[in-house]
Length: 242
Ligand SMILES: Nc1ncnc2c1ncn2[C@@H]1O[C@H](COP(=O)(O)OP(=O)(O)OP(=O)(O)O)[C@@H](O)[C@H]1O
Ligand SMILES: [Mg+2]
Image 1: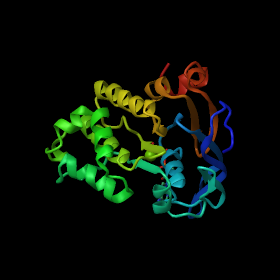
Image 2: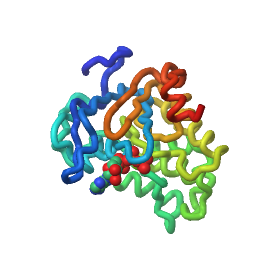
Image 3: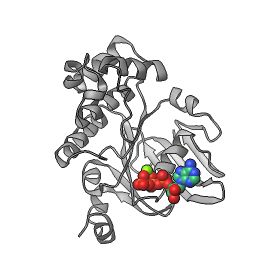
Image 4: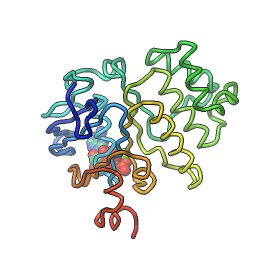
C-alpha cells in the first residue's frame, strides 16, 4: 500500500477529481486522502460541496475526471454496492433509521444490506454502545436524537467497515448531544475504523480529528493537521465565529 504523510497506509485517495451535476461544475480538482485508521474531517459552508464529496467517494455520483482509489484499487468506475462490499459504510445526513423497526431490526438491516451480521458483530456494537443493547427492542423512531446517532453508527459498524463516512453527525442535535455524539465518533475511531466526517461544526470536529480539509465553492482552500487548523486565523474567522 502507498504511504501517507504520517507513515501509515493510504486507504482512500481522491486525485484531481472534478464532479459535475449537469453543466454545474461542483468539485474542482479535488485531492484528498484518508489513511488507515485516520479520522479526517471535511469542513465548509452550505453548498460548498461537502455532501458531493461523500457522494463521489461512494460512487453515487461519478467524477467527470480524476480517480478514486480505495485500498489500493482504482474504484473510479465501480458501483456503490461494490464499494460497500469493499469496506465503505455511510451514516447519512439525519441518520435515516428505519423508524417503524426496532433497534435490533435496524442492526439486522445493516448486516443484511452490507454483509456481516455474525454474533461478534452484535457484540462489538453492544460493547461500544451499551445503550443500544438496552434499547434493542424499542422502535427506532421513538429514540432521542443522540440515541439514534448511536444506532445509526452501530448499524454502519455491523458491516465491519474499513472506512466510515458521516454527513453532518451534529446536525439537529442539542449542544450537549453534539459533544456526546463526537465522543461516540472518537470511540469508533479508537476501535480502529478510519473515518471521513463532513461537518459545519469546525470546533468540535477538529478537536477529535487527525487532519482536516476546508472546502469553499468546490475547492479545497485549506488542509492540514487538525491541531494546526484549529489555530488557523482565517479558519477561526470563517468557521469558529471569532
Ligand atoms: N443532485 C443535484 N443536482 C444538481 N445540483 C446539485 C445536486 N446535489 C447538489 N447540488 C448542488 O451542488 C452544490 C453542492 O452541494 P452539496 O450538497 O455538496 O453541498 P454541501 O456542502 O453538502 O452543503 P450543505 O452544508 O448545505 O449540506 C450546491 O450548490 C447544490 O445545490
Ligand atoms: Mg451536505
